[in-house]
Amino acid sequence: MGLRLLRLLLGLLALGLAAGASLAEDAPKVAGRDVPPPKRTRTVLPGYPPEAQAQGLHGIVILELIIDTQGRVVDVTVVRSVPPFDEAATLAVRKWEYEITKLDGKPVSVLLTVPITFALRLPEVSRQEGIPELRQGATPAYPSAKGGGQVTTQITIDADGRIADALVTEGEGVWADAVLQALRTWRFAPIDEPMVYAFRLEAEFQPARADRPQKVALRLSGLHKTAIAEPPSDPEAPTTTTAGPEGTPAPAAPVPAAPATDALANAPAVATAPAPAVSGPATIPPPTATAPSASQPVAPAPGEPSPAKAAQPPTEVLAVPPPPVAPPPPPGLPGVSAVEGVSLSLGVPDLVTGRRPSPPPFARLAGEYGAVDVKFAVNAAGKAAVLTVDGPPLLKPAAEVTIGSWNFRRITAERLYLTATVTYRAEGAQASVALTPVGAVPSAAPPTTPAATPVPSPVQ
Image 1 (cartoon, rainbow, N blue to C red):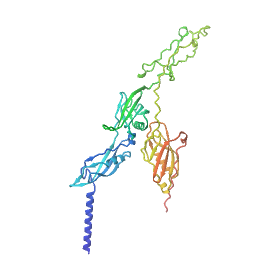
Image 2 (spheres, rainbow, N blue to C red):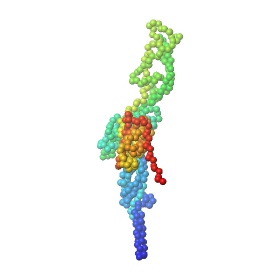
Image 3 (cartoon, one colour):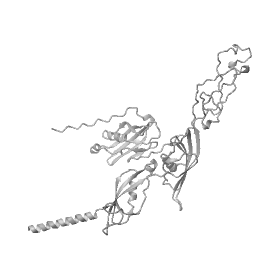
Image 4 (spheres, rainbow, N blue to C red):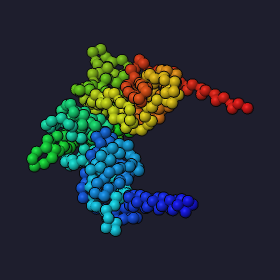
């Protein structure tokens, strides 16, 4: 009996060892360690996510693939995540195929690590001589609409090459939206002279044909430079007048003028006192009377014009025009949100980083759901600061922490006031962000977070 039991145990042990060996043989072999990396026979390039392209984002996603004995990718794991690109990389890699890997003449599955690099190429732009070189930016994404379109945009750039203003002068709809989204990512080479640069971007969306795929042709032209006028060197310098023949004042003594810029080198002299910009010639008012001198009679003879009140010859003043005022920016476009579960309304800038809204655990346990309205301010650096929170008590702290973590992409320095409505449901949470009306901007200080519920001490 004992011998029979011993044989049975030895048999089970042998079966276990055989099963373990079989499992070890079936486990994927690590490429580069157990087997050479297999050669890829079919490649599908990932698509560049439009929201990432609009923001000029790039990064490297690292994936871990399991390739079966037929050379097909059967499983994909994201080892290094870059949120805008994970899904695009995974979808493409699942369609890849490899040569069959064999070990001792038997096909085996392989574990392979693959990095996927997402990098934006500079747009192909033809430009007029003198327009600064484009150093950064994305090509406008071709809309899903049928056919093609043309968009013309007037662009003004500042000294460091950033786009200060962009106004669509021709084109509309999805075509204009695609151009404006791409222009948010553009940056030109810095300008090394005191000039304002303005030029025209012409974008032609060319549909696909038999001989070529769809294309966006870009051209920069119509360069216009305007000098940044400097103030005169001594605006307080007095002018001296002396009496001329027959009581007519002599021309004023010349005052040395400040060196003129290239654009003003041949311009006529202007009055040293600041003059308002006018569309036509203006006249300088007659100088006020001065104290009588020995060469000037105290009381003129009847009928003789007074030197102090003699009519002055009209003097033309050519006011140097200031740099042209850039046209107002186009109507606000919905910003691009890189945070899952957050939608942005017209005029709200891009949301770059931050927490996504999620129902708090205590609210889930209590079954409390609903909407929370949060008014907050965004400073020039893009950081959100909560001002007021209104909603169910168990949801308010979570909404305040979520919105306080947000960072927006700012291109202007003024403080921006926004309102977020966070809706909590059993299946998840969503947030929508809109501009706060001027009359609804709160003036109170940021709210204080409700005190945490004290934790009872353990029972002794």
